[in-house]
Length: 272
Image (cartoon, rainbow, N blue to C red; front, side, top):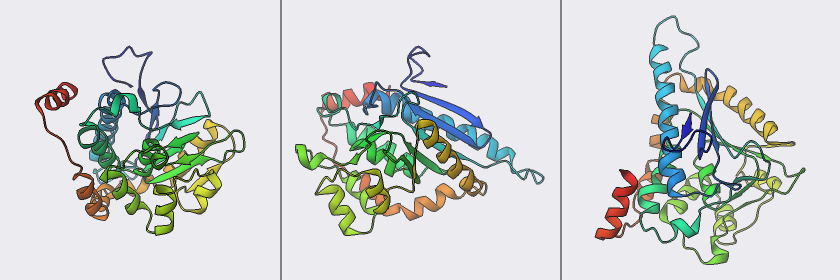
């Protein structure tokens, strides 16, 4: 499947594949570095997540038959473009989203919340640089696998402190939810430390490192998916997360939305 549906199928922003009965893969295709835009998030990523969940739930319902021992398994991998080993996502496209007051409250925060509470295990296959909003996208996933940077440099960084961008409440809430150590929070948010993969693994940002190409990162992500896909069978993976991250989600929804007829019309245009 290719998204947005309005684009030619050979020019997608996102594709969804279903390589195994229990596994779905969302691949980002927005230019060379997968900058996050309204079109990518609202027109492609959100519909892609909906498509994956619909597909999994159809299988899960069928799997409620007493003799079905395998159905209901599920896991989702999100990866940068497979035909390169340089970028997972280079963060927000500030030229397009910076002037948009609706971007965080109506576009990006709902995506982070959707992914944070997704009903099957989610794995970010970080196949290159992972900056700012791209790092937040990966933190909303349950697991993170990254190239070890031995073939070419790969960094993780929240660099807003270096260029004067204020964090939305959603970023701070997600950071606190994933990392209880104030030293890690400080290093990420206030120092804007540019992590090597090895440093990120040591600080608990990553779960696994992989030597090799995007294909190798995906292979390891699939191993993790295979390890935990059974946990989706009971149907409570997302329900448990909704309790685990209840305070986080409430905070993420508190980002201020400035109201004005022009802003409201822009939001309606995006929605409709």
